[in-house]
Amino acid sequence: MQAEDFDPGTELVALEALGGGGIASFTGLVRDDGGLEALHLEHYPAMTQAQVAAVVDEAAARWPLLGVTVIHRFGTLPVGARIVFVGTASSHRVAALESCAFLIDWLKVGAPFWKQAIRKDGGRDWVEAHGADDARAAGWKRQS
Amino acid sequence: MAELTLLYFAWVRERIGAGEERIERPAPGTSIADLLDTLSAKSEGHAAAFADRKRLRAALDQRFVPLDTLIGDAKELALFPPVTGG
Image (cartoon, rainbow over all chains, first blue to last red; front, top):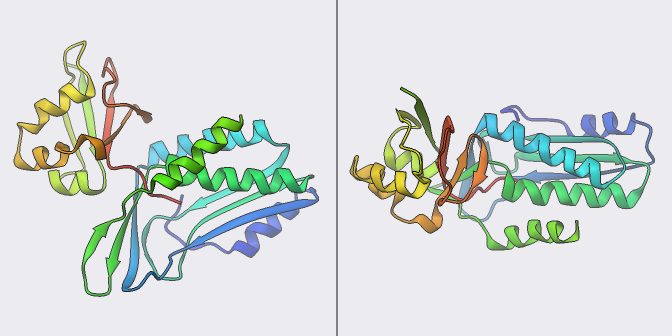
């Protein structure tokens, strides 16, 4: 959890160095959905650390992983800025891809972050949660 | 006297006008929902923040819990809208 930007290339190289044959990653950016200037991300630091550690442990228990990197930024991030990175390393393609999808789906619904949209006209409003995200995260639970 | 720290995030924090407050730990048997009823009487901001319970989520000692959960001997109660990370 950090305010600063990160370099996905550097993160991927670090995962490659773990010796597995497969690396999967997801990078989330601030999307320009018309009139958006930036997103402000607020979070609950102590709880975020505990929750992310727990879900990374769960991923490691479900898939044979060699390494996991999770980066989530907070603060004010302009359109186009990177918000989140999930990278997984495994000897197996399916394990790397599935665990990466599991982690990002979980971050959407289980990490205590809140996004506020800052519009070009100066207006601000809190982003509403999507029921579809809950459904995706719940889908992983059913398969376990 | 044992204290309970209340933490507020996003629009819950904005409506109350503070991110944190400390109160005396409620009596045994008090649920989060019971406490919200009591807190709503404190100010218009509290009442506005806690009016729509369907859009309110809670974490007790940093674990997500339903609003009917008993507070027990928890030290920290966070109240916030559904999360929107990722």
